[in-house]
Length: 330
Image (cartoon, rainbow, N blue to C red; front, side, top):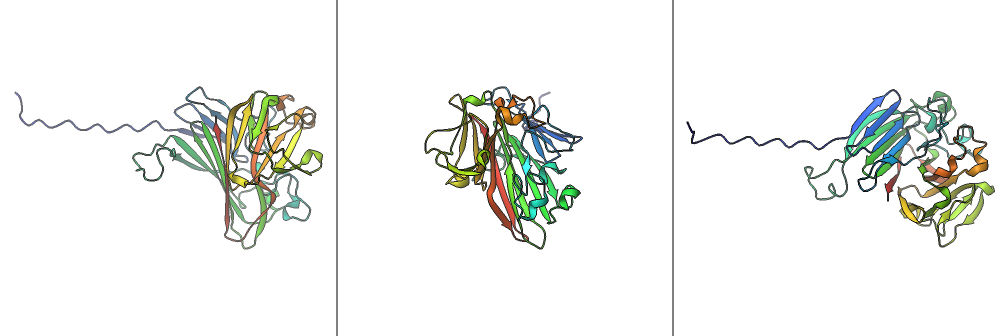
């Protein structure tokens, strides 16, 4: 028998969009997006070991260079990926408190703590004026922490300041961003340098150029820190051992583009990291780097490293500093 007042069908609950999968296994944190793009971080140094990104919905491919001889057991810094350099870049001058620390400081060899994950919202849908329902959580943020209390005790003893580092790795379709916040949690000021030592993967270094550094002064470490100025036009080409600290006139506001064979491959934007280190060891230098493998691997990598290293940043007690980079596939 028909009923005149049938109850209306319950509205179906909208299905949640696919979410990123995040796993912590041993000393590795791995995140995989629904698109298949992924990032792999080692807790030693919070070092990004792998970034597999896709262009225009294509198949994800490895975008970072990692030495086949890299040591991943925490006994030394990782050769490749994105190590975090703090509180000194290179070897410290003798008149600085960091003078007893090893090259590139203590962050890249200390074991960091994984603080957790959260979703990231694309700027296209989650900008000003958008509702939370309209925001698209198409990425993932991974947070890591290091403090004076948790840093390598042997290294901490060489630089006795109370600090805290918060490192965030954000993976989104076609891009990877890394940011670091340095906080002075002690009662005395300290000076520091910071840098994101990014090893980008390329197919043929002889066809690679960097745009965005024209006219910039730089320190040439290969020639004993000789002060030079990049040509006012053209790209930075890599034709031999290259180790330069650029100080672009526009600071962090100057975007960078890494091209290969004349085609844009990576875009690099910086926030509060006004310097750029460009490094490739070339054939002869790799012979003296024990964990660099294969020895002809220099043909497939280029370090483009945003940092604040041409001078020192002073943090007073209670103050914080933040710097970041965003790498986009082009």
